[in-house]
Amino acid sequence: MKSVHPIKSVMPNLSEYDALYSGFEWNEERIHLDGLPSGKGLNIAHEAVDRHAESDLKNTIALRFINTERSTVDFSYSELRKQTSKFANVLEKIGIGKGETVFTLLGRVPELYVSGLGALKYRAVFCPLFSVFGPEPIFQRLSRGDARVLVTNTAFFEKKIKSQLERLPSLRYILLTDSQEHLADNVLSFSKAMEEASTDWVIGPTDPEDPALLHFTSGTTGMPKGALHVHQAVLTHYSTGKYVLDFHKGDIFWCTADPGWVTGTSYGIIAPLVNGVTSIIDEEEFDAMRWYSILEEQKVNVWYTAPTAIRRLMRMDICPKEAYQLDKLRLILSVGEPLHAEAVIWGEKNFGFPILDNWWQTETGGIMIANYRSMKVKPGSMGKPLPGVEAAIAEIKDNELTLLTNPGDQGHLVLKKGFPSLFRGYLHDAERFQKCFVGDWYITGDLAKMDEDGYFWFIGRADDIIKTSGHMVGPFEVESTLMRHPSIAEAAVIGKPEPSIGELVKAFVVLKSGTEAGEEMRRNIMGYARKEMGPAVAPKEIEFVESIPKTRSGKILRRLLKARELGLPEGDTSTLE
Ligand code: ATP
Ligand code: MG
Image 1 (cartoon, protein in one colour):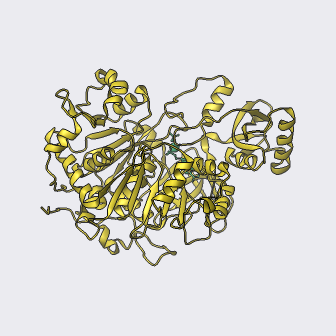
Image 2 (image 1 turned 90 degrees about the vertical axis):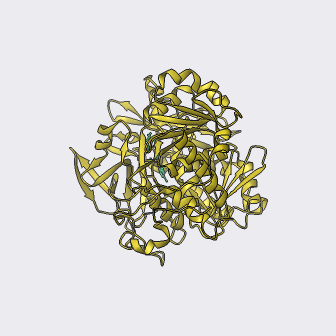
């Protein structure tokens, strides 16, 4: 039965939003990003699923799941609509309120995606948790996120949730994906509840400003923050999918990120669906050989991954173009950490096209600065701001913001408020949220510079910047140079307090396998670093280590290296790999 939608989709009528994307010079299409006409509804799940289920895309594969054993399960747009409608009905039946939070704690299995999109249809808030978290970080997030419903499996429930239930009085229902029977009044079988639910659901009027998604940050610089996003963020997902990920009809897209990180939701769920393409979802964790074979087997056109994955491929020493049939692959993009210039060039050599870096954060909800396919790529640069996104470099002193306009000026990377996917708050932390803004500008916490062509270059996180002998040194710059040394596989750099010069630059270095650590190697690296960077910036101390501590999303945890170095408490390590 065809259901009626009281809300109107804005996506097919992007010309109505012509004021939002002014200055979109590299594509014929011009769309804009703010000022949704009032009174119109906008619901992410409608744009992502229902709209297509009523179009000629209805039989197109929306999601293709590949499980650990390599078998696949497909959901067409039409099937996805039915399943997500069922889940919305389940939420209604158990009496969940609009705006209440539905969490998932699952691997990358269909139930996660169905629950997430179903919750959005219902107008609940969706928050996916990364399944390898232990009980305490899970408790922290469920509790801070006011969880009402949790969809998980029996093993996670037994191991990670059961002992926490008393501390979570507002968690009303647990739905178990692998239980055939309801176990208690509040511990239900997902499949049984779904079986009984109708496939019809009419999405109620959703305001563009209604809360939709809750995402915890990666915890790279401290305790993870819960960033809240609203339904109109979908405009950013749509436009960045179209212009940065370059989605075209019939495309097969694969995002390797887990929905537990914002990339895995914004681009692993929403953006490809909103653009009507087919998304591959692999259940397995990081495995470089498997990546190549999935890219080949699934004929992936566009691949979105992270620098840590690309570095792993680079270390493998195979030329993918020769070893695999990757003729369908036309675009690889990277996010999460700076992508070293060498990786961009390596991509060009080994795939036939450069790997495109782009920058954004949990708080921005979607890509903000990017290298586009249709523009000249400057290796090592994050690219240019999206149309409708105003990015600038600023100096901030005593809560006063001054824009720095000379090319090459280094300062805080700031974004003008007003784009749809900007977070609307840190949950239960209004003060911290307030501190992110000066006037109309959102302070990202990153430092950057802009060159004469308007390209942005990442310097570092404001918290990681090293002040040495009157210089400001970005760890990324030093790490990039170190990684060009033929014996170095990975490097992480911190500032270590040193009274005479403020901080000294200390490098932690992982050598390539088969390379011997020792005094000679240390001197060799020191000599190389001084020659390349000059004595003011080159590391004064080098320590050889087996591995670099990283977050599960692949980011170097410099604060942890620093705390260990100084013998201080390690702080929150819930996202440590
Ligand atoms: P927390 O805010 O909890 O410390 P986090 O900032 O790592 O963690 P995320 O929102 O997942 O959490 O990551 C966004 C950050 O990742 C950016 O602010 C930036 O520092 C870094 N980042 C993302 N993409 C890029 C990129 N292309 N180049 C350089 N840095 C990037
Ligand atoms: Mg951050």
